[in-house]
Figure: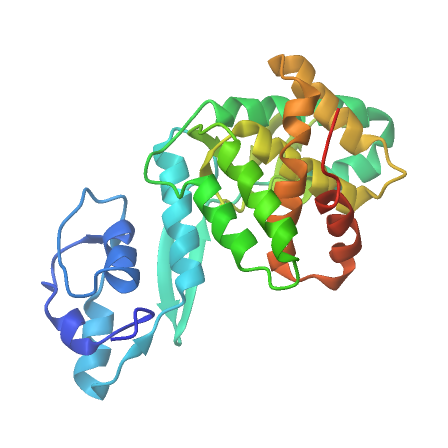
Length: 289
């Protein structure tokens, strides 16, 4: 059976009154559709509506794995103890899957920087402080960052085999950590509460679909590249960001730099033409001092 679908027969085997957690549901759909086990519920997904559809049509139902994976990752970040907008519901309406989360009122950090450019230094520091705070958390159920990056780098056909070998060798040599990494931490994914003068009172991050467990410096290197892509080479925001992290955590800049070719290569899998020139520049940098 195709692992991306679930047959009505399998749906019918699940007791209609049994609350099924999203972790179980995702596990059944993507990994072990033939195996049914009950794990501690993260939240409930009622499968009775799918059961009724199955009885009427006797067809297979395609599931939006992206929606389910984002819900799964978000719930695991919540379980790690990070203060983020709560996941309220995973639902299907008119055949379309959706996620409902708590609404957080406020602008993105990007909007705040545009409105109060003179406060950018303080905003970047707050951004780093929040990132450091959630990197102290972890969840062993999250995907391992190095495993994910290994698969990403191996999948890039446009990379020369010698370059790919060098990148994978470096990746394998990096220390194994289990810190919570966002994977797409950038001003567009940061929601802030501020006062009338633009001073940040509270900050939170959204879009945790790429969350993993791994090395904090890899996540910092990734955000550095995202800032480069967003603000351009002429902006000093990326440098101020990475300098703030190194200062606040007593981390050597050279250690963070070692991750830059790796995260640049991994991001190539997004296949965005407008990013390729910058990313390839970082991939081709071998030694950092």
